[in-house]
Image 1: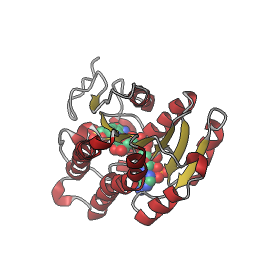
Image 2: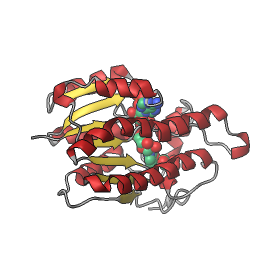
Image 3: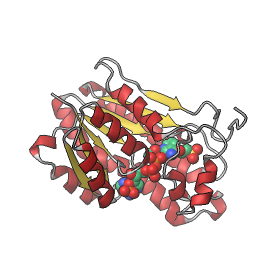
Image 4: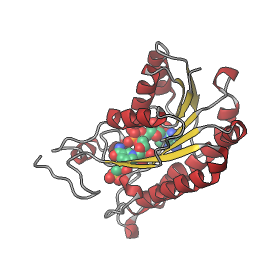
Length: 251
Ligand code: NDP
Ligand code: 8X3
């Protein structure tokens, strides 16, 4: 039987590329995001390859998260793989001038949203004593860079939650692991800089930056390992990148 993967943030970037590679490999898909038009477009192209169901909700709204997951039709109600990917940075400011609304957005989406989705899905995994959760962290989960303060804190929280989930779900045979990408060329910087495309493009200029497909490929590798193999924690950067702030633009 084909496994069903539930992907948050599948309307762009890493989540969308993951949906595409999993569809090609016959995983059934539950695709989530807020932008309904994008969900519809992706569902229409990927349903040529596999069974697809879409759920439109904001991960910040815990009632909407619960209602969406409870609404899944029978054919999609058993979730084998949860990919907690939805998230973004909002702003890049020193702590003393940071915008409180940006802080709320990052903590509410990257941390609380991940928890709400996990809370709604973990019980069925516990009941079946099977399941695989992939949490998308970041190099910002492992180090802090100038002006990254709250985004880095939110991703450090994802790192801690990943470890906590792995410990607490260990008695039930549920696999839990995180993937921590360095810079990836997605809509991430456009969101961070509130639609300023040229500032966003500048982030990825001058070096061979990771593409969303690079991370999607790794996610596919992680979910296709045999059951006794759990990739617990993985940092992936472009060759040009050595840390959040060190990028070699001469290679
Ligand atoms: P994108 O901006 O391209 O994608 C973000 C996704 O998250 C979108 O599908 C968006 O969907 C969804 N999302 C954002 N806010 C919400 C919300 N409130 N409710 C539901 N869905 C939401 O960025 P990436 O693909 O780069 O980001 C994916 C993950 O990877 C994030 O967790 C990010 O922190 C992480 N990451 C990214 C890196 C990068 O350099 N790009 C590096 C390291 C980690 P919609 O707007 O339709 O709701
Ligand atoms: C996204 C990568 O370096 O902008 O998590 O924090 S970075």
